[in-house]
Length: 401
Image (cartoon, rainbow, N blue to C red; front, top):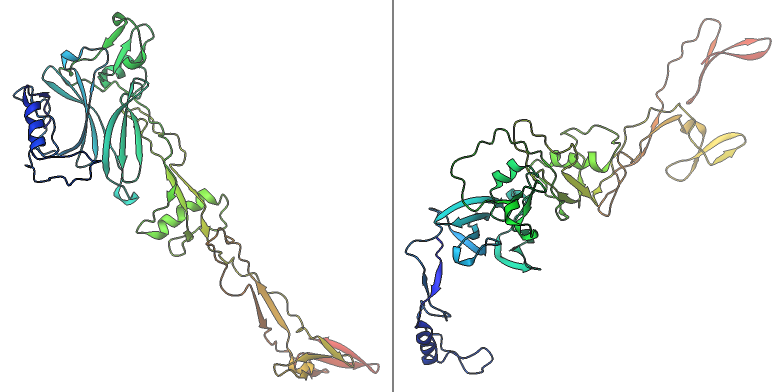
């Protein structure tokens, strides 16, 4: 409930005498201040009373925490043509037009969005003059907003849109055919169509089309992870990595850490009307400074079987260093094969990115193959070699391996 107030004649001297009797001293005095004042007069220097017997603004079931009042431009103050800004307990900013015992809502703005983004609370609102132009300053526990009192072109510069706004700060200029602020114009009144009263009836809006447009980017802040971490973790993949090496699924999410996010919304303005277009297909979120843990690629195919490496040879025969540090014969070694993988799917990135766990190369003893010799040949069986051979003109001929 909002009352319009005025000073009570003769009460100023009464209040001064009341404060003097309690010896309420100035803040720079070292003497103690008597705080045993009645609650209805403590810190109250000016007594006020309603100008009329009825409140000028009332809304059942609503608690207003903050209030600012401005006069409609280019109108005499005696007309009591007012614009009132209120913020209620739900942090909804409402712009009212009050004139001739009528009150109508011009615009509403929700100061905070979804709760998961760590919204704050509104702590202060003040109407100030910036080069004679009113500006709303709204402070929350997280941010300070500087809002214009009028947004005459937010629905476009069509006369129909200007009528729908019905904002007392705005007027339709017949000469320029634009919906413009009264604060910015010195045009003759005959060229301006003003909206000084509330609409008499609900206006038909079926022919109005307002296309959506992106709002400004918000500030950078730590990205908020959703309850389904894997779903959120996949989102930066398409933004940060233009060529992901695999399609991540829910069972194998790409984990990102330490990301900074900023958001924007298709709300400047929201689209309105059946044929209205949404915002262009661009990202509504930007992600930066992410750290990603490295991920292994798939294993490569096994290489061919190769003799085990030996740093020593003696009399033309391969020697190997066994586990106990002694040299062993080639009978102690077996052909091996290898396969590899790489920590590039993706590579570690950022200050918090971790390397892939485990080894990137794997060795395996080659499986032994069975050799069956044909008639007329004999099997030469060694630990590493099986050969079927026969004799031909006193020479050894290999027939099968």
